[in-house]
Length: 107
Image (cartoon, rainbow, N blue to C red; front, side, top):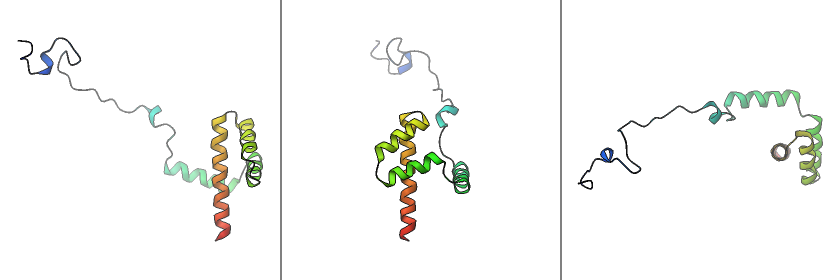
């Protein structure tokens, strides 16, 4: 008799037991979308970078990267920024800047 029950909500045990309900779909938390780069933020950051230029430690990092001292640049960035991940991110950012500068010189 129990096996003849075709409707899944009439079963009293198992994974699909209980009352028939509609699934709850909550909105995304702000913490889930925090950190995504928006167009306005990107524009403002580029504008500030263009006007103010690079910090002294960033200029030193670029100099280290130019002479292919990548590991030393990472150690320097870690010292200034506090963590390994921040240092890696900054080194990558400085590498991108140098690549853009080289591309601009070729044109």
